[in-house]
Length: 310
Image (cartoon, rainbow, N blue to C red; front, side):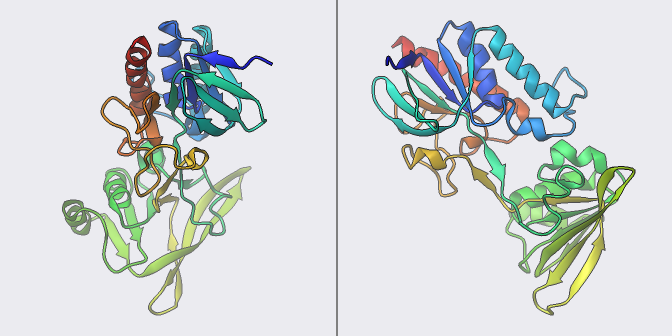
């Protein structure tokens, strides 16, 4: 059986991978996109996207499908397949989860990241129906409503400040007695009239109801770790910022990763192994927005095309 050889294997079929596939296919690179689930990535789980230029409002599922159709139109091959290992070489040897193999002269890691979950009752039940992991994506739906934010790092505090522009009130629940975010954004949050705090507390349950066939959040239950008492905070939205988990387990430390497991790549999107590139949410330091993901995918292909030309 002859092993297939591609110019570029893109691992991940979200906005980064599909944008890269469009540019690679248009550059006449024989390209394959390997996506474990459905093309579109995490954007497909977003109810409404309102910040993608030129498209004032679109469902995440439709935007993901448009990316997919665009890549296929220009000749990119899309496979529903996970990658279990990459062996460096000229070409690289990729083993897929179904046991099949393929070879590629270059590889783009575009596997993204997923939000770390709290694993409390109600979190999964109300995901997308009051529970969110992205204020920029979903904050508009909670205009003039009460929301709760979980976390005390940069993301939690920055997104709380963003939500305070829209929501009636923002309550930050943090398991410690002080924030971990940068000092300047701490000071802004602490001084903001719409933002209050529940210190030394953890969320124990997300409560909601179902009305007219639709579920929505009504409150959260919070445990004070010092007094060991539980209380309820009315809220229509819950934004969880307890970290992101990069989808890099399959790499088995093949390339250099930062302390959180994100792929370290330079300004040309090159990793520690020549010929392997990283872009989008999986890349250390990338801002996790759709427009950035697509831009990085396109930029990475420019660098890859130069590498292949050499």
